[in-house]
Amino acid sequence: MLRTKQCDYKRLYEKYVGQMYSYGKALGVDDDALYDLIHDVFLHFFEHQNEIVDNDNVKYYLFRCLKNRMISEKRKEVTMEDIDESDDYLFSIAVSGLDYIEEEEERKEIAEQIENMLCSLTGRQREAIYLRYMQELEYDEIAVLLNLTTKGTRKLIYRAIERMREQYGPVLFYFFLSNHFFPF
Image 1 (cartoon, rainbow, N blue to C red):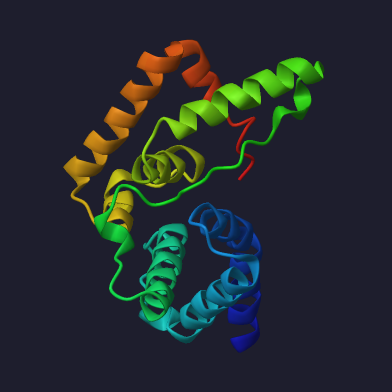
Image 2 (cartoon, helix red, strand yellow; image 1 turned 90 degrees about the horizontal axis):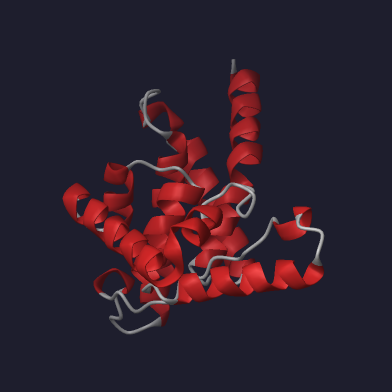
């Protein structure tokens, strides 16, 4: 019985560690600290797996634990600076997946346009877009991660989408959301 749980745990780790790493990097956590945080989350998950209902969204649970651990570590380092209170925190998304475009100049131009599009958003908007479209979390799950209401989350994402559409046009925006760029 214990062996089965360990195998399931290993599969969960292998399935989500890359996505958690990507999310942590986007939140600005350095590699060494990030791996420690991820391992802490999985250790917590393993120790409390009997308390977690099977119907819970495991990915959401792991993301939430990772962000909570990161905030706890930040609070230890910084005096009372709360990442949840500000729209002005750093959240960077790496553009990838442009390899299928053969022309290097075109590839650079598209990457630059996408970077500019992302820079036009606040950190909180970038995080919401990332969680919704790259990690495919539900609005209510994102709301908890961002400390918002579900309605507030929908509004935040809507405003981010509108800003990108207005400034860069619908074609580039939908190209941006294509799975080619975010291979998670």
